[in-house]
Length: 232
Length: 285
Image 1: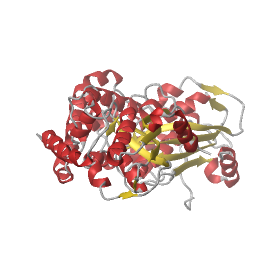
Image 2: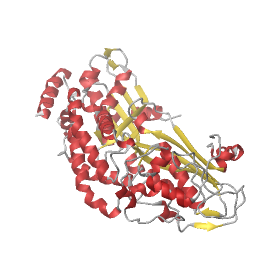
Image 3: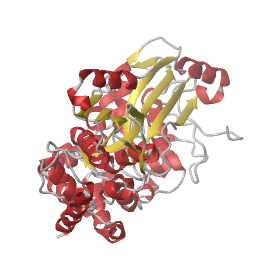
Image 4: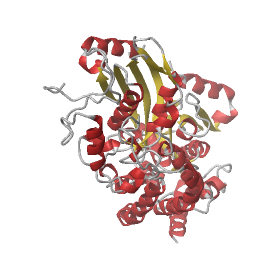
């Protein structure tokens, strides 16, 4: 019901973007994106709180804690609100965020926004993972406001995510909106589910990347991007 | 330092010189101010709901039920190392019960996922309630364990009275207010009084207390008091520097901020030079 509305909305929106590269059309990723964008309305958040609070109270009791003690009395409410904040990407759509800030500019050199802090939730354990995102694109007469790249990262990272999918969604979103020559996204993150539990390897990091367009085809372009995002 | 004399707890009636008086200094709580004998103190504490939290906050905490506190422990002998009331939350959860609690936790997580607008039937989320419940149980496994069980074997008599420091112990805990992780490093130092403890045991004490729903201040104090009780050293110092995801990922969203808390007991509290030496030795880089 909700999802159908979201899908309808997305399909009307897609028309205005015109040509979309064949490789990103009709993929399972696209499907997922359609279902997730705006699958939750901001106005409904308040009404969902009681159910979330009750769930958190059950969890606290099941863990052997005493929910009446002072430190935990309002924790179910705070935890529910925190969780809603950490998944607020479900409210937002790229279309709304980007639509105003695309400018015609006669620039066809690489544009990179690097070291964007990213915080997300692992969808498998509901434990945070965080790191840095580096985005680069080669515009084709259309540039986007720089902070909008960071906002795209926010939209997609404030969800239950898998790092691979996150980097792909960011790349695909930019690709769709600007139709540039190429897009590259690299994410380097620390997964708390690996650090705090499980294997407990503290210094390990996961790096995923998505290269679209000329970044995928031309190794020299890719090399230039990778050397520019290397930290000093 | 508060003015006036503060009472010290003596676990064993030993004839020791005034300088090397082992034990913990309390700031006076409401009723226990001048309880002279240990018996009196223990008896008094049993009248109060003596959870660790209550001792640390200097306030009455009525949250912990008597059932939890006395579950399995009928009498508390005066000489017992457990006399601090730590056992209020220690073993409030039995490891064998974890499996049976999973279904309830899973159902709660399914509610949460749906309430957040996600589709619980999609492939990535199918087993998430189970994984998240197990993860949560792991991250709060400190409720299973007691310091007494872990430390009791590894205390050795050693004629050493210089500072011993174990620093840069990685610590991961859960904020009890938002159920979001906070993590950082713990530095522990103590001056033994004829008794040293196995070094990894200090890290294990950190583990027990950090794998719970915690507040950083309380965590620091609990670690310091546990070591203090177990070894009766001349002094104990614990410093924790942590990053709180509840501040970094949400709320104010300040990436680089760190919270530092410390607990200084015994000689570290009384003597500024000792404290200074500890802080200088644990300074990083």
